[in-house]
Image 1 (cartoon, rainbow, N blue to C red):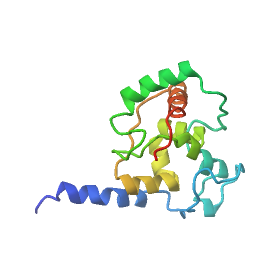
Image 2 (spheres, helix red, strand yellow):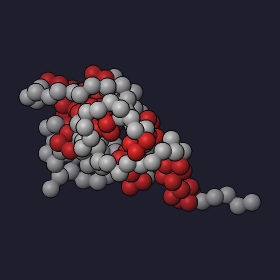
Image 3 (cartoon, rainbow, N blue to C red):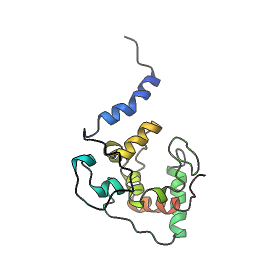
Image 4 (cartoon, rainbow, N blue to C red):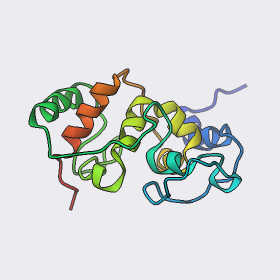
Length: 163
C-alpha cells in the first residue's frame, strides 16, 4: 500500500475538521452582526447570539474599550512579537490573516476568545471554520492568560487596517 502524499492530507484537513464539527447548521451570519441575546437556536448552529458576535471561550462578557493604554499596548506588542508574528502581519496575508484593523471588524471579546480558545472557535464558530477553510492552518493555542490576550488586543488596536 502506497503512503498518502502529504499535500493530499493537507488539502483534506479543512474538510475533515469541518466534518468533525457539531453537525449543526452553519448560520452564515458574520461575527459582529448578532444581537446580544444569550439564547441558542438550531439556526445558529447551537451558538447563542453572544457567542456568534463575541466568540466561544473564557471571555463571556463584552470587553469595553476606552482610549488606547500605551503601556498595555507595549506589553501586547512584546507578546505579539514573541507569539504571533511568525504567522500574522498587520497589513498582509501571511500564514494567517492580516490583523491590522481587526478590532474594528470584530469585537475585542471575539479576538480574545480566538487567542484563548482557538480549538473551540475552529470547532464550533461558523466564521472561524470558514477562515480555516481559507487559510488551511489552525492557529495554535499560545497558552496566553486572559490579561495577556487583553494586552494583545490593545496592541492590535494600534494597527491600521490594510489598504
